[in-house]
Structure formats: C-alpha cells, structure tokens
Image (tube, rainbow, N blue to C red; front, side, top):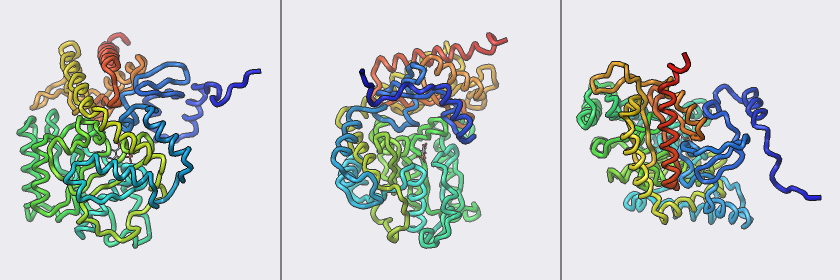
Length: 457
Ligand SMILES: Cc1ncc(COP(=O)(O)O)c(C=O)c1O
C-alpha cells in the first residue's frame, strides 16, 4: 500500500468559499475581489484549488518583493526552524534580530542609518505608524499631525484612545488634530492646474498655512507622508515637492516621518523611495516587504528623538524570529541581485507599453508610478474633462476590468480616490515573459470590459 504523506487532498474550493462567506466578517476585502482558494504559490504564480493558475500582480499588497515562497526565503525559514531558535521572544535580543537589524541598517541611506535608532513594533504597518506619531509627540511635546489628501497609513487610530494606562499614553494622549494638506496629484490636481505648477502651489499652500497666525494650525508633532501614495491611487510625489516638504518642516522644527511601508525594499526602483529625492527624513516607517512575507514592522528614527521611557510603545508580537530571518534574507537578496535596478527597468517598460495602448484603449486616463509600483487610472472617455483634461473616473469599469483580469488568470487590485485605479505591484523578480503576459492579459481585459455594457444589452 502506498501512503501519501504531507499534502492533504486538494480542498474543495467552493465549499471553503461558501464557509468563508458565512463565517467571516462583512469587512473582508480582498476575499471579495478574488473569490479563489490558493493552494500553492511560487514566485509570481498562484494556483487555486480549482487547478487554475494566476499571475499575481498584487503580491500581498506589495509585501512579496521576491514573490511567493522564494527559495532564499524558504531556506532562511528552514534554517531558523532547524536551529531550534525560539520563535517568539517579545523584544529580547536574538542573533536573528541582531542580523536583521544589521541588514536593515545597511540597506538604508547611509547618513540616516549612521544616526538611527530602531524600534520593533507590533507586526503591522499601522502599529509602526502609531509608534512614529507617538514618538514625535513625546519628542516635541505637541499633539497634532500634518497629513495629506489621499494618504493611507493604517487602521488603528482608536486603539490608544480607549487604552486606560496613562503610562503608555504619557507624556501626552495620542491622537491630536490632523491638518489635511494637498498632496500633489498631477492628474487630478487639487489646484486644478496640474503638472509641476500644481506641486509648487501645494508646497506654497503648506508653507503659508503653517505661517499664518490665523490659519488655525497649532505647531504639530510631525508631518507624515508617503513618497508614492499606494492606496491613494499610486501617486508619486515629485522629488522637488518632497525636498520642499523637507525644507519647510526643517525650518519650522517639525519632524518629517516618511511612510515607506509600501514603497520600500526596491519597489520604486530605489531600495527606499526616499532615495529618489535624496532628502533625509526624521523617521521612516517600514513594514510589508521587510519581513520577507512574514509579519514585521519597525520605525527607524534619528537618535535625537529617542526620548521614550522604557515600555513607551510595547506589544506582544515584536520578536518574530522567522520574520527577521526571512526579512534579512530578502533585504540582502534584493540588494545583491540587481533587483532594484530591475524594478526600474521593467516598470519603465510596462509603463511605456501601457502608454502606447492608450489610443486603442481610450478608457486609460493616466498611467503613472515608479518602478514596479504602477497605476492605471480608468476614466469615462465620453465624460467632460476637468480643467487639467482629466475625465471622470470610472469605478464600475474598473471592477469589470478586475473581474476580466481574474478570468484571464491575472490578479490585479483597485485603489485610488474613486476606486478606479488598477494597481500593479508585481514581485521584483518578474521575468520579461511574465511582464509580457501581464500586459497582454491586462490590455485584453480592458478591451473586453470596455465593450461589455454594449454586449450585455
Ligand atoms: C503606506 C502604508 N502605510 C501603512 C499601511 C498599513 O499597514 P498594515 O496594513 O500592515 O497595517 C499600509 C498598508 O497598505 C500602507 O500602504
């Protein structure tokens, strides 16, 4: 008799999906967009329980820099498991954490890293954002924050508000006022002018508002921004505007926090997106790819801000040994194998091809992004253009395109102000053949979805 060891029989996908619909919350998200049951994954390919294979352009919302189950990551995890190292360690010192810290600091801009401290957070980007804001509140003795239109930084704003322990809230309660500032979004310019002029006006508005004694803005604890907005619709900040934000905040003693949760680890064609502009932030919030597909989040900041008391930002899951081993291996592999430059090259190629398809696919309003963080904004070509020439976003078409992509074996998620931006976040290991297949399936899906309403009548 032959025994099959290890792999359970292929799960019945439909039954699993049915149970998920009944048992899990109404807030489930990706599960609604992609009703598939992945059973195996390798690199960019995900195989469903139904035996269908998909090219994954979501990559765990930008987490999987090396794709699924990369051999280097698996080897690091196996080595750690075989070593007998404890898997959970709060924030105790371990060889794995020491090695991860070395790899992370070596990957960061040299001047910043030379004077940096690192704090290990609960293993989600949102906790590192909370930590960074709290750190700057402690350091400045102020409460408010400057944040931008279209920003996405996580989901936990209320946690500290309902916590009773004043020691961890000390010295000031978290969650001051947020002043919302215009992020330079050339295609749908907040000033209705677009291009570089729009970014100049956004910077001028920020500076004048902060200096206006009747502007209603108290001196804030920090400014927080994404160098490329991801969930906001893949909107890259112009380098000049970012340098202006650095100047404006530095001149007014406002710490600048860069949220690189999604843009880090080669994603934008630089190891860290901050390198495009060359500015030096006061803190960087990092998560997603730094854990090599396992949960890990940190805030790295200039040492002069380290005014915290012991335990000021604690959490149970801050010592995930496997994530640190997988993360260190990922950081080193990305740096040593030219994957950062590759992200820039392949990203430019995909952008050029999508730009070239616009005559044939007039619903493509804008193609933008940096490296392998790309967005395609879908519009109604019959709609009235605004003062910058942008036509109305078409979220219903975007949903049809996402479905048509899935039917063609391509996983692409939506984002943006109107949920009308197709977001491409393939792994940095994407091959030329895979990039061609993505483009072919995507363009075919857009063409199909464009015609769909007429055909459906
Ligand atoms: C820029 C940015 N910051 C913070 C977060 C929150 O990270 P998490 O979902 O791990 O809490 C995200 C998540 O997508 C993000 O894109």
